[in-house]
Length: 75
Image (cartoon, rainbow, N blue to C red; front, side):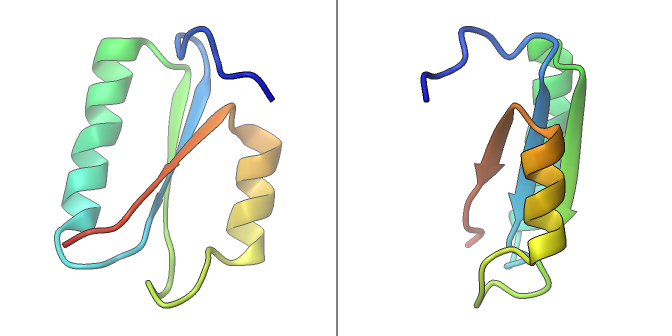
């Protein structure tokens, strides 16, 4: 699948793994994305544990609603 030409007007999903500092970092990233890139919406969800992938309901929602998804690790 080709990459997006722009994030403007898109829905961006952020999946937080809940590790130390990741929630604050990803929430700040979401604010910056909204302010600077003029996205339609940022969806923010936190996984119940960093030891497993995102639960099926989160994945299904993001597949249905998001144009792009950011996920990563906190430290």
